[in-house]
Image (cartoon, rainbow, N blue to C red; front, side, top):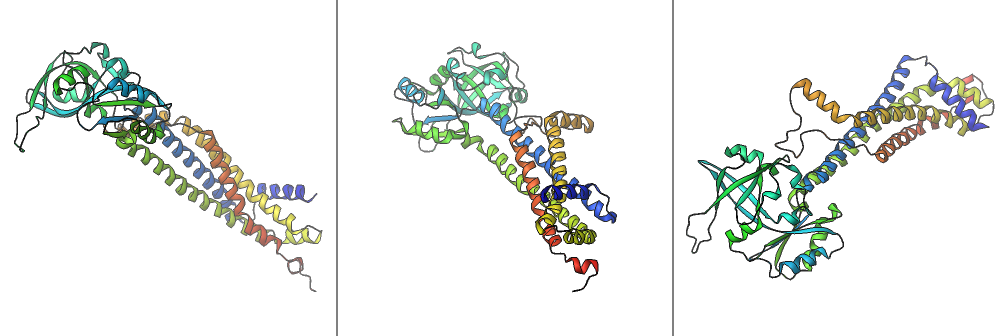
Length: 414
């Protein structure tokens, strides 16, 4: 009997106009504060989720998840080593490759670059770089022809077009620390790729047979592989590397690109803390609203007490009143945040067109748009957390309401 009474009176107090307009203002401010905090938290986390998805789907599609590189020389038995790598249950694909670092030269222009000498047949089992090749493809790669595929930005910097010739300058090993002239390798540009970010400016591809001839290697000196769980790539790389006998460097994408993922996780954590504090501040407005509402309703509370209302009945009245504000604020924030998160990319593109400036530069980041991925589990958690915080904010004013003495309020004396 008492709980429905508490619910009825609490909802009536929530909808009723306050005698003091300042109380009404603070009540509305508390709802708007909770809504804004919930909305911004949902939008911010959706943007971070979008970056995380773009990292997995785009950057990690062209960067091997794990790499094993022999310290000196090449693999003694490459085929056996490849089978050993592929035997690991969490390895999806593997391919041999050779790393070269040198200078590309076209007339008087030069560019430092890391070249990745690949085996075209098996490269697609590890990376999806071929889908970003705008001119040419792996099919144009034939061993012995000394061909190269470059990022469009590198080709633009050097003034190159598909079919042009260029030179690769490689350092020559020297004895007694004496300087030697670099080895000059003539190459032909057969393709251009554009993925976005720094990869376009730092990476190029050539055929593995050409690299073996240039460096005088019997086989590849490195193996790249793809794993089924990218976040476990570091541990999987170690497990795979320890099964091989060669003395080698063990690397994963976390070694070279992990800072991006760590930055995303750090920003998400900070966003949780900061924006939940914003919601907490909004919930404190509920405390102020209810304290003033209790002072305003002291006579009503005294009458209810004389009619037999228990302390918990009175407490539930004001808990319901405060929880109502928290519920409305959480729902409005969740709906508004979900709508903005689902349309965030389009909203930011419209804003970029309005100001005539790109917020994200494709030259710096691996994407040139603001991604967004709404996670409904996070929306529910955020909305529920805000609601629980608003309910907790009602406990002190509700406790104060239950302490009011009817005799003092109604003018009776003992």
